[in-house]
Length: 316
Image 1 (tube, rainbow, N blue to C red):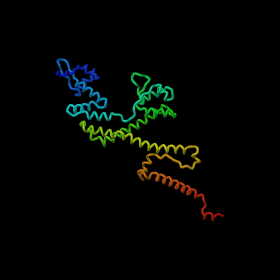
Image 2 (cartoon, rainbow, N blue to C red):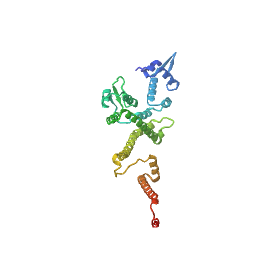
Image 3 (spheres, helix red, strand yellow):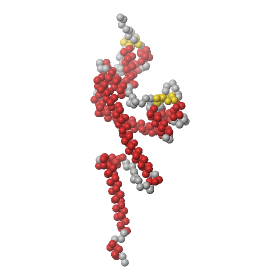
């Protein structure tokens, strides 16, 4: 039985097979990321081990690792600690955070969905925001990462909202949502994942445990945001509708109670003072006391113009 031959590459061939440039390969060697080649006379000889290492580095770079952290991982690998668990954890984090499937739409379908009139500015905005992505090799078809998000935009436009306003609203909304996501990650990192973030890469067992936690916690961010958004919409939508109804033409002659907006800072101060469960009663009592005080003040100020009994007796 003959021994299988080992593939050998010149540096140019290695660059061709790996997709890296010759300059990048040499830089990786200088930084200790890639083993030195075997020297044969005046030629450097690389093997499949070098090709595999280059592909590992490329994969880790795509996952967001820095070259410094990649070097630590590869050193752990060379020392006998596997990368399987770490890469499994990375795959879990990089996986989809929604069950929604991406779709496709042609330019004609897109125009028809938004009123039938082509709008190049709106399309550019959608591409910039990632609502649409160009499909390589075609000018009239787009990838839609979130069909649900595109459907919301179409409904808003059909209701009369200009496309420029929709783009502006999405930019504002995205900033708030990214802040919420960052805070959730900071929170879970501090209280859940800190034990896996030591100076050394986690073991396979630790990485597998962390990946399991990611799977369990993955839906919690969306569930908590959904619940809080529903609560806030119920609260503010009701207040908003009542406020606008109270400002209508019939408001002046209506006997319905009037609703006013109280600054959030004031409400928070009241909540700290009397407790969240007593806020409504406190505000109502304070308003009622103010009304009574002003009524008494008005009566007091006008009493100087009303003759007393003694004064009446002295009138001749």
